[in-house]
Image (spheres, rainbow, N blue to C red):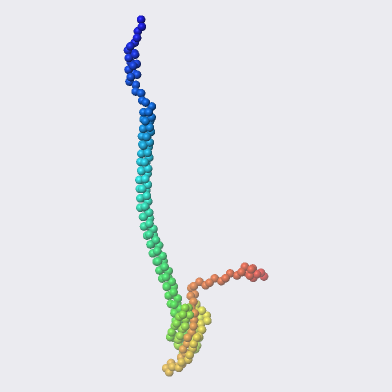
Length: 210
């Protein structure tokens, strides 16, 4: 007697009926769609990343421009300060030069006043550069000689002090008077003297020999 299990056969048929068969063309389409979706997502993320980087760079550039403007302002202030400092330094230098220049005539006039002998007085004083022409009156030629000797004895006049004119004039009240003019060249003794040139080595060596 042959037994057939019809229940198992029916179950097998049911499983076969429920299976879905996807054709090859649809599988290719689904795969391409998945690849396209992945690509779109990747490109979108890459664009978003570039956008964020661009925004960050724009912010950095803006901050750098603000700092540049601040530095330029500081640089302008420093340049103004340096220019002002240079002007003040020039003024100080000019004032010091004027003070030094004023000191020399004061000393010269003081030395001339100290050099005046008795019975001699001055009538005019002319300066051209460092040359002085001193005119005056005295009662004798010996007064002129004493005046010249006194001038040469100071450190403020170069030697020799020369007589450029002398005339005897008769005066009814004071007697004979000598009108004179002398020429002197003043110098500043406080100025550093120029250094003497060094002797040649050969000559110095020769001079050292006995």
